[in-house]
Image (cartoon, rainbow, N blue to C red):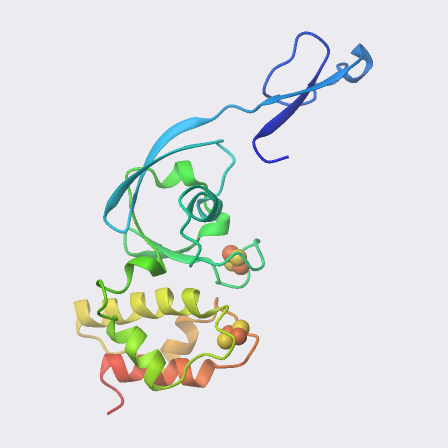
Length: 191
Ligand code: FES
Ligand code: FES
C-alpha cells in the first residue's frame, strides 16, 4: 500500500477515507500527494519525491538505496537507524524526512573516506566489536559522534560516559564491552 491513499465515491482526495464516503459506494485507490525535496546526504544533494509522512529512515533506504541504516524496531528504541543530522545523533525512524531538508545528514555509508576506514571502523575491526553486525551501523555512527566530540572539545569521555552515550543503542549479541573498548582506543584512553 506504499504510495497510495484510499478514497471513496466520486469526490475523492489524497487524504484517505473520509467519514460518509464509505456509504457512497465503490472504493478507489488513488496516489497520495508527494513532495519533491532535496536532502543533503553524505555531502551530496539527493533529489527525491516523498509523501510528507515518510520517515528519514525510509527515505534513505527505500528512495536513496542507502540500506546501511537499519530498520529494526522502527519505533525509536534500538538505535539501529542512527544517523547524524547536523552532527547530532537522531533515530531516523522517528524523524520525518521533510524535517531535515536543508540539514547535513550523515549515514554509515559516509563514515569511511573512499577505501579508507574511519578510525572508529578500524577500532571496531581491531576489537572485534560485532557479531551478527545488524546493530553495527547504528553503533558506528553513534560512536563516531562521540569520538568527533571528544576530538573537537578535547574532553575525553570516561567508560561510564561512553556507556551512557550509547544507552540508546541495543545489541542483541551483547558486544557492548568490545564497542566500549573500540571507542576508548579512538579517544585515546586505551593503547
Ligand atoms: S529502528 Fe529506529 S530506533 Fe530502532
Ligand atoms: S552484533 Fe548482533 S545485534 Fe549487535
